[in-house]
Image (cartoon, rainbow, N blue to C red; front, top):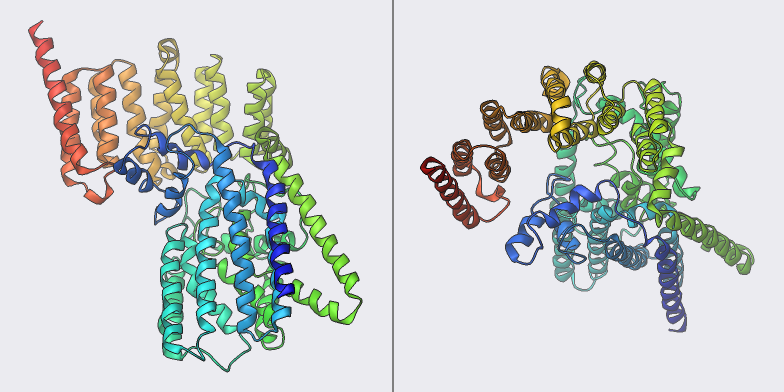
Length: 639
């Protein structure tokens, strides 16, 4: 009892210490994907009703499920936008600590199921979960607000594993109760984890790994139950993942790699993940991963071949030594299984640290077990000294990294300077120089970066944007930008730059006189570019931007025709109503009414489940707008 009390006390001290270290990162701001995911908090004003809350929860676009549980969790911190990052980061830290507690419990239950002695199980569980909890690699997941999605998927996965392992211990005594609770734990938690982030669907496969590595064959779930509750959902998820196998050359027009190149590259990346997990550092690659070197073949670069051999050897050893070293096999096979979705054939960006948050849960089990074995063979005080050294290094690195994350400007510049091959990083440096008033230096930096990275559409568009914003852009600059874009691969951020360019010039009449026609020509030229025409976001946006430019140029008939085409491509009543408002504000009421009628046609055909607001709201809003525009037309005709 005394040892259990001391173990609990050690865990509480660890949690408090971990929070203290992470608290230095609370002063950081929002980053990158935080903005598009959280801005809908303010789309319809303050979220103060169920309908507005539901609209936000259903506004997700980050994955096929929309991740509504993760979005709902953000309402804990605020119900409007703009907001402050502090409370969001605080909640993320609390979730990280809770995950640490659940991991400790899960390991303890795992070892009990594997027939480890209680004292040994407690000791290993505490050490292994402490390493995971204090590891600097997970600072980027915890302090990057939007990665709460990865945290919640891990949270529900851990709850499912705990529930399964706890119920499994009942098999010798209450088998029916055990099967029921095991099934419930896996079923409910898989759903909750998946609707937090899609890789939560891997929970049955991860439990299958734990079951496969279990050396205790005395009490094992019957094969019928395993087939129904573990094998069937695991194969279903793997089928959904690997049915995307497609080795065609131009599978992903918005990526600079195809599927074969992605698989080759991921071999190097997963190897790098493992290296950084076992040899931690203060700050890694950060979020500027667009410049990561793609493996063009198994020998280019040669580290691709070395990585493939290493990973195959690691996987084989996990199978070969499963009975002799079950914790080693659990660590490796769980890690690989958890990477099945994000590090194989799906066309995601190549490299992100947060993909290891779930995958590394049991990775440090062999380390803790080895330390326990060592404790029995040499002087225990020496082993405790080694543990203190390990914890001290991890704590120091995590503290330094959290402190860096607490200063967003410094963090972004650190990443930018340490990733010279990243266009996004160089874009950040140029923007920082411009914000500090170094206009010429910013322009020179972009031009030099473009010389090194001529394929970057992002840097190309940013250079034009900066010249336009300071009124020094010429027709030649627009022509040069157009020529470069025609040769450069699609870049979503470059397209966002095109939107910013359009919004900027139409807001200023003098800017529009100088640049509207040039910008229109640029967009129309891209319409003929095969690479851009394949991208749905650009196909929708192109006629919309053209409509706004025509409207600013007082060519209302052309604007109306472009708005018609935009509504057809968006096929969304909310987007259509926004266009009606623009045309009604800056154009004639009659054309706005004609456009509203077109929007109403879209509304009548739109799936009710995909509406951003309730059907009742649209049933009131569309007739109200129609009456306002009709009254305005009558008023104008009476004058």
